Image (tube, rainbow, N blue to C red; front, side, top):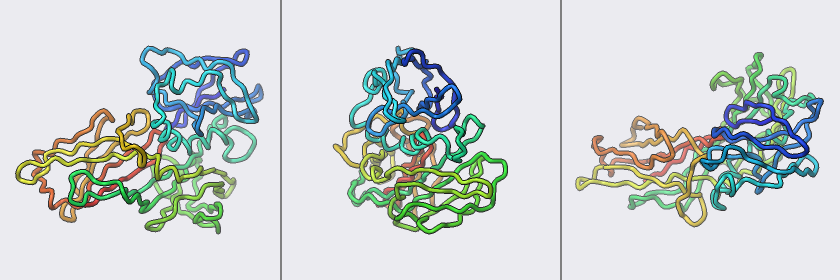
Length: 338
């Protein structure tokens, strides 16, 4: 069995004994599990529920040292545990399962298809890393005359798709073919961009696009073809997490602080716990046409930003941004105009 870590896409091996095994807990990134045979042939992947194929390890109860998944049963490539730890060793509510199912989608697609280059060998066993990332620009609502914005017009303004590879021979361009309804229903050439140390090619949508179409995306390199799958992205409209800001003013109409809660894009409106879902939180603002320096929030446990020493006049603020990455590597830039 191979245990994959989301974000880094690193892996380690573990053994299955008599159809059952236990996983030693490392409270870090979410993990997914791939089952392989004696000759490293792909046998299937661990599936939990609601399209979830990963374990949010930082949610594991503090006194739990191992997670016993019990006996495993398989149907085709789908392997299900007798003991599903979601809700037991890993406490999580029904509302929190919704963003987990959405956020883990692209990572789960790699777990389900770990041979992206189609050469019959699981990619990581050859030292290869292939994955994709989607970055969204979202306008979910406006402040209007209020100090807390309404969520009444969820709008995707733009998205980017980044195709990543760790190949050392990175071409300047690749050709991408995708499903009907995607920008790649006719083959499209993408240029190389610099994002970290990976070989990366980028697509940027037009303004106010349709969501990325679900289906198979074929990326043609000079010497190989990579096949990625993008799952249905429509759950972003209801099951993504919004950082909903509230502005507190002093008697002079200047911003004293920005506080926020985490909630689903649609639903009850109740706050939820974002731990194990998001990281790299950013707060930014535009004042009188000028973008102010971005503030990095160190933890999801921090829920307010003191701006009392900045002298910011609320009437001059145009947009507040509450942005983050999910723990699976996708980006959400969320903006609240007045």
